[in-house]
Image (cartoon, rainbow, N blue to C red; front, top):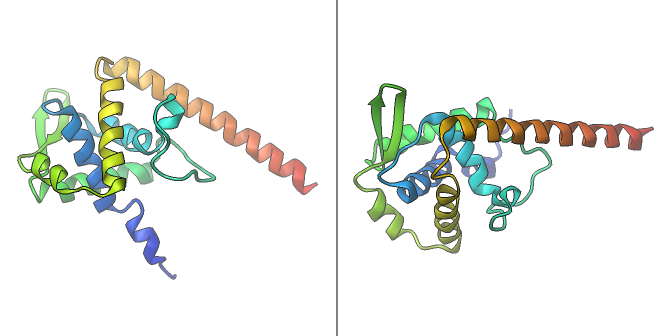
Length: 165
C-alpha cells in the first residue's frame, strides 16, 4: 500500500491539533468535550454551511460531518497537543473536558500565516456562534445537519446512477 505524503499533512493529528488549539483558545476559559470538538473540527473548515465565512478548506466530494475517522484524528490531535501543554484535559462529572493549555495563547500568537490567521478568525466566529447553546440543542442541530448531508449524498448517488444508464 502506497501512502500519499500530502495526505499525512492534510487532516493529520498535527493539523487537527492546531485547529483544536485555535478553537479552545478562542473559547478560553471554557472547554469542550470530545463530541463537541469533533463537530467543531468539521464546522471550522466548513463555515459556509452555517452561512458564515467562506470555507477554510476546498470542497471535497464526500464531506460527512461526523465520522469515526474524524473522531480518531481529533483524539490523536488532543493527545499530541497535551504533550506540549497546548491543551489541558479536565475530569468533570460529565466526563473529560478539553480547554486551552498554559502555552496555547503564546503558540497561537506565534503563528501568522494567512491560513492560520483565517483559521483563528473562523475559530472565534464559530465559538461565538455556539457559545450560548446547551449540549441538547447543539446535538439536535448536528443530527439535523447529518440528516441533511445523508439526503444530499443519496441524491448525488441517484444522479450518478442515472448518469451511468
